[in-house]
Amino acid sequence: MFSTSTQRWFPWFMLFARFFLFAIVQGLIAFVFFLAGNSDPWNEAARWWLFSVITTNLITIALLVRLFQAEGKRYLDIFHFERETVWKDLALAFVAFLLAAPIGAVPGNFLAGLLFGAAETPAAMMFQPLPQWAILIGLLFPLTIAFAELPTYFGYVMPRLEQQMGKSWPALALAAAGLSLQHVALPLIFDWRFILWRAFMFLPFAVYLALILKFRPRLLPYLAVCHFLIDLLALSTYTM
View 1: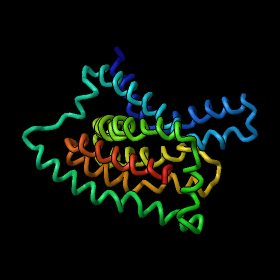
View 2: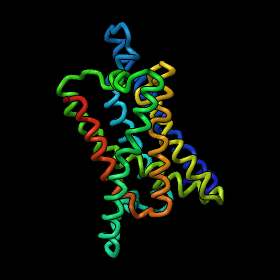
View 3: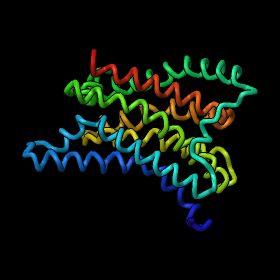
């Protein structure tokens, strides 16, 4: 077991872990392409970002399981549905899901137009053609992210930072910023406009989710399902 002083650093570690894991996994994929003689291994690896996110999600889930165990808790307990409030929670989650669509999409389109002159340009940089088999494996992307992303920032990091700092709003802001900024490394493309687009396109969405889960933490499993559906829709970009 970890000491109490050591455990205090774990929420801070998890706040940044996914950003670095995305970059590290992309680097490993790039190294494979380099060994295979690819002329531009880094950008080729960026094209395969689905595999970076799936790998990172699996590592994240493993870390969360271990970190909750260190506290004498079960990771899966954060996905508990409260029987007494299930219908009320389902209704709230449905409303939240309806509002999530414009909050998640509009800022990204606005930033893309501002930075690139067209919303389609950065999307085309990200959603490059992949073989059909890769897209089928990519179905693990929305499935694994439902168990990794929101649980990391709002099921683990935010409540523990709030406990450490003794204040709600700095913890909320840090967790939302962490969720938003992780996207810079997914994929990591060294174009300053793309980096800005990825850094801030989901910031309003992250703050929105943070606020909901601050005041209604029991909605996390419902929003995890919504997250799955949203990213499943994003994955359909590859097949259009």
